Image (tube, rainbow, N blue to C red; front, side):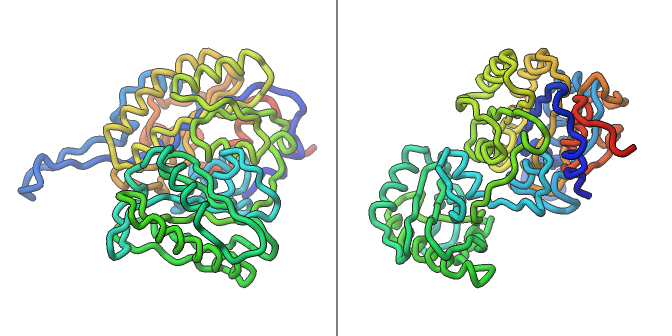
Length: 417
């Protein structure tokens, strides 16, 4: 059930401060490793999830002072994209407020989207001579190479349309494509099959109103492919997250929260901008992210702080278990500085799981803890999936989190007489 309308009715104009610490994709799965691949009879050694394996004494100490549980950010069995996952954490129903990744990517680089623009995220990718995908991220090319390729495409591609199009670098292998014109809609299937070993999928309109835009997109892809044919790595583009831009009500108008986003990656700044949060200067490391949080918190100009860490998700997507463990340990080392700010509510959780075992997002619930003077502290003494499963919050929909945060911050009046 979507309680957000009820929350909006009983929101108080004052209350305490809230810090969200989002460890992107932090949920994981146990890793089974063979000592050798030559003999099937060799015993299998199992490690726990990345959170269980990581040395994270500071997160564990916070768990001992918190209410703990697990979040299904979108729904049981549903694998969330980053957009839906974050929308749920911020109190927006991710099913009714469906946003394509392209919109969030465009906003994340401060592109001036207009109502009705159609946007899609692009991955530069590597295909073989038969157009079969070998690498969906083109070896994670650097951003400078990305800018060169975007410029090359923009100079040469000609589209038969009344209006204009834009191709902008986001970071590394990611870019964003925007169509602006009359009579176009963005209900279009992804061209990214999400797996290597398959061929890219032609853009297909999901309704009649989107057929014009789908035809334009297919022309764009074919021309871009021809231009990239000589590239060693980035010789193809994949497009996903198509959508038409329509603004959403802000976090401040709904919940009375004046927020600020501190995130390295553009997509997360994009969703924050969409919801009316201020955007901090881009930090160049997790340490700088925490320094920025400290600076803004001490100024006291906001009451909601969104601190995002990306490396846990990137390592999971790369299938690198040890790298993900290291990323968790790096964040753990910074947590005493976050906790010492002593906000009225400190939330630590994730937008989805990205087990290194799978190398992609997954549907598995993510651990959650809420520290507040009003939290009902339970018996959980560690921050990982199995421990949090035994917490007082149980397994909850992600959409519940904002209501819990507001209540623990003293920002909700009584409901009803």
